[in-house]
Length: 599
Ligand code: ATP
Ligand code: MG
Image (tube, rainbow, N blue to C red):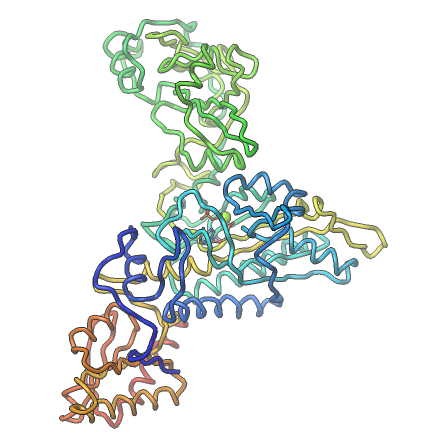
């Protein structure tokens, strides 16, 4: 197939779009792949659609290869099933809700567990029908709070979602493993560096869950791994082990001290070292202090419930870890009006004395698990300008529980006991999880087992961000001059550029370029052919660099010497080849690279 630039629906732009913060997004717009229709909503132009379809094809082939069957559900969905699973409420502001002319509620599907579950319930009734894996590749709608970087976080985006249905836990594990293997093949073929990390199942509930992250500095997810390769997790899913108890027998009784003007940890540590030196002669550090952070959890129904979190003073509460723990509630700041409503909390001096469901504030109080029973702390005394010293957990104060919400840092011990953690950033490309029986129970999906007894089906749910993958590949492969597609997803295999001015004057150049294009097409290659007249060679070269097809063939002046030029977009390397052998050379280059890259 050839796309001729003289008629292709394409306009490359010299200037960056105003709203694009990441280079890949800027280039996809400038090179004529996508155009913004509304915030987080994009139109796919012909070149972009080619890339999208290639990603889609890789995903489809690998899903089909594990025996999953493709179908497609509507995107416009009724409210009832989502009401039954409570997700109509739990999704909060993140779903698009709408009404028909009769005032009946609908939503645009953010993900389709409910519909798949009901479809299987409609059609199947026996263990003999299972296992079953079904999938679709379809637009999803989420009213994201922060649409970002064009396709990376869209409000309309293309997702492959599949669902497995099994009778037994072992069956679910087998379906999960098959999907995991298919995902490894998909992401190997897409050709970016990725990691598989333990993940939180978030609003979905369920148990085992892993994410496939493209390793990328621009990623919104942070993950950790150890050197031995025995542990990798999204920071959201890191479970810091509970510190064992320590001996507090030598710790003096707790005592309140004046610490004027110390509302922050830094000012507190300085004041302690100046006015209350430690008996053991060591300097006080932030790690000796217990910081109590109060936030508001906004429930899906809008209710505001405060939560107090105790962390060592040298660590922050990580908003993403906290959000993952409290989902579907959202985290909001504890504001002046909240202080006014909770007079026992003294800003800057909040302490365990008033925190806890059974204490004066009635605010639930949870601790970081690194805080050991028997450990002694300096913390707020719930009075302006005062802190309490030698306050021992278990002896002098208690909490309502623990929470995995403190930041995880480079060099922290690996939770599996194997070395230390390193942090890096990634883009979530895929997510697989064992839903278990949550949705089947809610929607009453049961089948008869081999003994004629009704049993609840167990499910898995597996997503790939197809449109996000286009953006991730673009971001991961571009260079200073433009996009730089890997062969697996390039919109065309070869970009043929005819550098003549017009067909009247440079008939030979155009005739030869036509001929080469036709020959490449005949060999089954996809060609983007720049056959535009009255466009300067400089503009054509710039466009070819911007568009980023891996092999660029220039047919121009050197034709007089019987040669054409083959240029590698990524390395910039160029070589001249004899016209007679040009087509063979190009085909070899394209096919060779394909085989060489395993893509
Ligand atoms: P994220 O944490 O990035 O918001 P998610 O956990 O909500 O993603 P899932 O519900 O697991 O995402 O969706 C499956 C896949 O769909 C994700 O792994 C991701 O690749 C893709 N995806 C999710 N949200 C978006 C979006 N707003 N735009 C583009 N792709 C998305
Ligand atoms: Mg996810």
